[in-house]
Image (cartoon, rainbow, N blue to C red):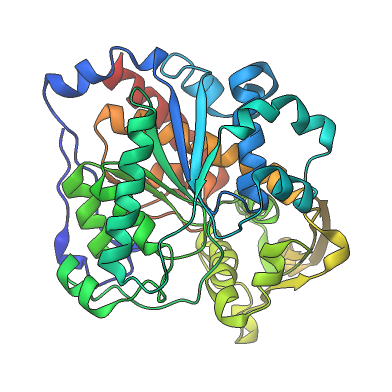
Length: 416
């Protein structure tokens, strides 16, 4: 049954809005999906030459040549196997870096030459445009990017397109009170939220969106327009390593009725993301996403008995680590009689290697969701995000996995 959209709450944080989805009815949706198994996938990546973006380019190239090397890492390989082809997958995008994609892959040092060299021919075909001029206002940038998107779609006319936002963390600004696109265009400049032109251009071109960044692009005006255009949008802030394990462990402690008394998290990483996050204004959104998630899961403020939060999250830029980030967690919890216990966790992960397959996984979800008739936020994809957008997103790991499976079943029922 169609779900209504509660537009009365549009002035609030869109995470908590009762902004449900619309389900497209009629034969047009079903006829569109008849050939979905053979339909290529086109990823349009904002930030295509960054560490995650360039790694994603190699993943995409490998997916097209040797899907057996990539598919086992994707949740959608099992849940959506009968709805999506394994190949071909194409990638295009935007980036200010004027170095070639090959030079960027080498510079980031995520992948050794023997891992990406077999795909040089495919990587050479990745078209990366220069973003719109900074002198353009918001409507001008949106129009420029929309023209790029239409040109990309013309280049791959049979492909299902998805925009993946991999731009750096930006300073936060409250845009929730804006009521319509006209007000947004008149009061906001692209410098306020560099992601916004990409998001609006994609929506106006009918392209679904994966917001892998911590930037709050899912403001009420954007969500209204996405619903109006029949575009699903998922986000916010991809959950790759430390926070993923935090959700798992917090959910396990909650299931045993063990009280979390304190949780200290430290991250060190030496890539551009780590460097960017040394700006407190840019780090604020990500730190909030990483911190709030614990109280949400547990259902109480960790450290409440101390009168101050005892959940601490720190991010430090440490150049020697490069993309190989490291995370430490100290977890203090209480058992029966209030007796204290403690757990230590040390994660040595590869930031972009963890992120790139998730971005591809999410792109595949968005294609299927659009084919099934979903539009607006998709809270059922909370499994992938630190700050999932949409009404009543599942919080615990168990619920997130269960809801994700249900979403896969729902899509199959709608499409097949």
